[in-house]
Length: 630
DNA sequence: GACTTTCCCC
Image (cartoon, rainbow, N blue to C red; front, side, top):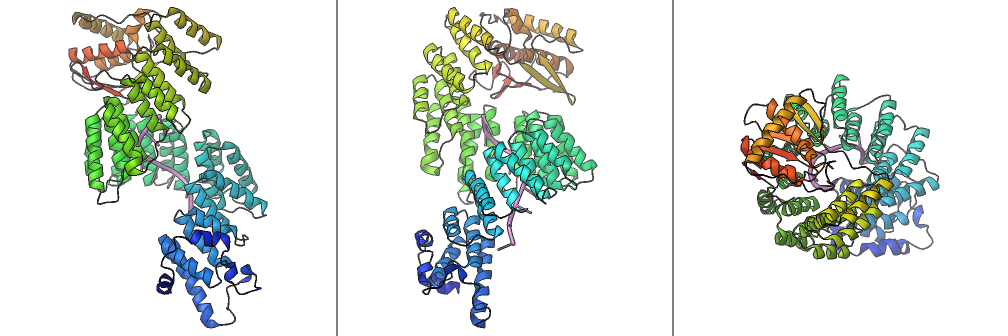
């Protein structure tokens, strides 16, 4: 059968117009209604009936194998034989097109066949939920309701996935209501879909309500709820839920571990992550590449790049995700050379394995260039994305480039690039420009950037502070005062800076001038000692009376008790000599602290890793891995 | 007939 098809239809690339224009209807013998072709001959010719069944099962095998080309050939054959619109066969064809990401074909065929079957709708909704445009999935769902069909336990998960992708809570809520009125409210697939939808829209408590209401749960449902917390910045609740899962006699799955590990990476709650790493050995998941990839990310984010690399080398199969995790791991630490070298290796090793860098790989390498100040290489990579890999740059890639150009002092070029962007620039883009303006003291462009930022996020105090500082640095006190006044009028307060450090499985948090820690007296004594030693090196504190963008230090002497210094001092007095310290800060590190920490690293002979909002700084022997470029 | 969760970027 298939051989005969292929001999008749060697080239089926132009099938689409045939489907959509005539659908083969004109090929049917005159007068017969195209849709009335029941599985023909079931009663008439046994031979025909047999071949009909054969075609049907052949189509099913194409679905399973996602065999689009044979599917197209058979479709063409069916059109010629007058079976192009047979409801059963056409539904299978729509399914083939849908699973093989050829939605244009699926839609064209869908449009001309009878639509009484829920399966047919589901398959097409699934196609749009997977490949987009996601709005189409929602539209189809609506059309389906309008046509009088009731959604089933497959329809809901599909359309909910589309809502998740769109972060469309309004539609999500409507669907939720409909589920509650249907008999599928206790279905675990529908439940998991609802949890995921609420979580991706940012409504964790509603996700939790869905979870609580489920009369019977399965592992996937638990995993969905764990992921809901993990993705909404509640890593500790995610981890607590993992324990709850085990407590309720559910065996953790690979997804449980992967989610839990990535939750630990976000909290930089490395001790928890290490526990889970140990746990993965006990349950036998440590050999799984996905678990390893999550661990690579976790260790890299926790400052243990070498541990991450060891795991990376152990992978049985390096997928794009694994390469990406390691490349970004290097990049965020400022190891631009290692990141780029790995990228070269990825391209080389990938050649024989169908492994191609994706848009995230490019975010990784471009931010490596950004942290390393490699302007020319950055441009080359940016240009090669579209040219050699057919990847359309996203806002993230543009942000990297604007940051890179801005940092290097090419402010006008950065501004030009913003103007040329085919995507609407967001606050990240303008924020990068504003920051670059501050570094290079460009007041005029800084004002432009702030104006845009105010339009986009009027309530973000940080932007006003940066411009205020820029004014101060440029000696424009009037401008600085105006910014402060503007903030006051709008009731905006700067974010409170805080830093935290983990000592012996416990996380200690400090804010500026913090005296609440039980060992506060010792911490301040240590700071004083350090200050004396730092001064001996000839260092003079940076006491320019600026309205600091990172902490509330209107009094210059407040700089000495910035949160990161308190955390470091505490780390020094609570750990044995030469122990590496890892401090995390919620904002950017200030110039003065950066300078002082470099000196401290030499004086106390310690490696100090400071993770700020943007990147990692590894201070060692008086230097920082960022090369003072951040 | 098919479906829900997980790792890489922001």
